[in-house]
Image 1: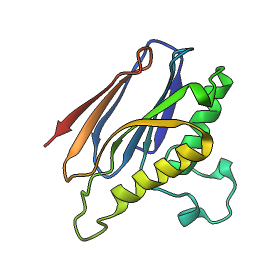
Image 2: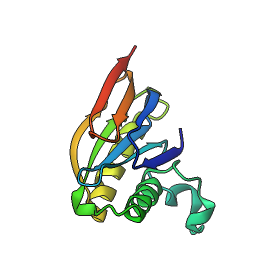
Image 3: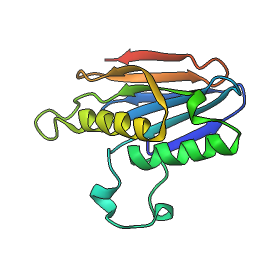
Length: 148
């Protein structure tokens, strides 16, 4: 949780037991570059105010993690118009305590992806059970396994 990775190798990236967090995969299909984010909260500004980007944990916040992963994909030669994103998670795992955190995470991801010009192609979100995610960097295939 709270991390991201970008690779141009033939890797399989895995995020087990995703609940209200959000896993965002980004795949650049021409150069076979892939990124996976496992973010916990929707907005960095809610917790950090005007702190500098370098002071915020890499993948904790959806908005910052997307920027950082996209920056790294661009450094590998990726172009935003060739990148497609898939989003998994956003379940309601906390009942009445914070019922909208999963939904807020998803809405934050949709907004940010639109802002940076990355197309969201699939989503497996919501509900009240967790998921595990496997992502093939080479093919861009995302496998979602429900965890009861």
